Length: 142
Image (cartoon, rainbow, N blue to C red; front, side, top):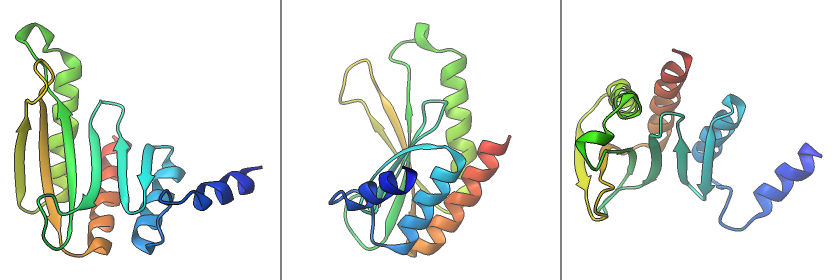
């Protein structure tokens, strides 16, 4: 039954990637039981703390890929709690483990639901996957 499900998953147009690096990441996520969605090379990873990690072509154009770590922020001071602090800790620990130069964006387009996006660019997708798997492995193992 599992073989049939996997065959169907790979048969959905636009779902499973044909790129070895994206397949390697998606297989690793499956093996660790991490929730994710994939559409081709684009992969969205949901961490238990509420942090969303997205892998996609370079944000704003250009060559390469970005790992985009999104953290939902509280819309008011009354909403700040342990969940907010855990999400921020996970996000900054993850990008710290990825290393390299970071870019930031605050999305406050939905009133009351701001999101902090932290982006780390990579030219080489294989190196990106290596760094992301290593960082996620350390984060999930603590």
